[in-house]
Length: 154
Image 1 (cartoon, rainbow, N blue to C red):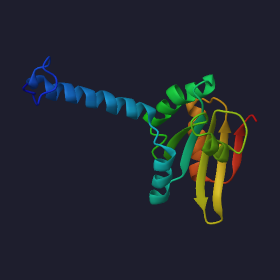
Image 2 (cartoon, one colour):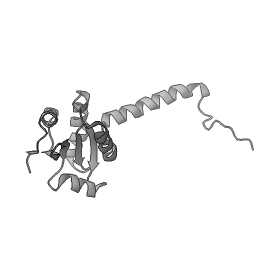
Image 3 (cartoon, rainbow, N blue to C red):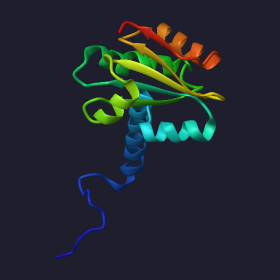
Image 4 (cartoon, rainbow, N blue to C red):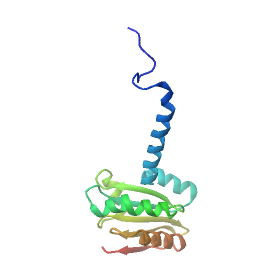
């Protein structure tokens, strides 16, 4: 029995570069729309660049979390609002211990910003589903005056 090195006999070899390019474009678009690294990657970027870290903590079953994840944060990213920070998303169901440590309690969604200062770490939190403008204001305020602050309802 002779085995072919080409595993997809139903596709023409000539079409592979086009298909590969299309798949790469789709994958890149899906990653870009999420805009978030893992917490470990964002934490590493924060340490390497000195930029603050912004973490969206939420869950799949939470409607407000889904709005923040799929609508608000991608819009903030498209407008350049995440350019000055390392951004990550943490799912409370998959990473419960990490989410609890980051949030320290409270409801979801939470957008948390940590910024290193000469006095230590500063933490800011924005609680609940927010508009892109509110998120951008929260990030801008954290970048200009990174003192501790909790915004939103608790």
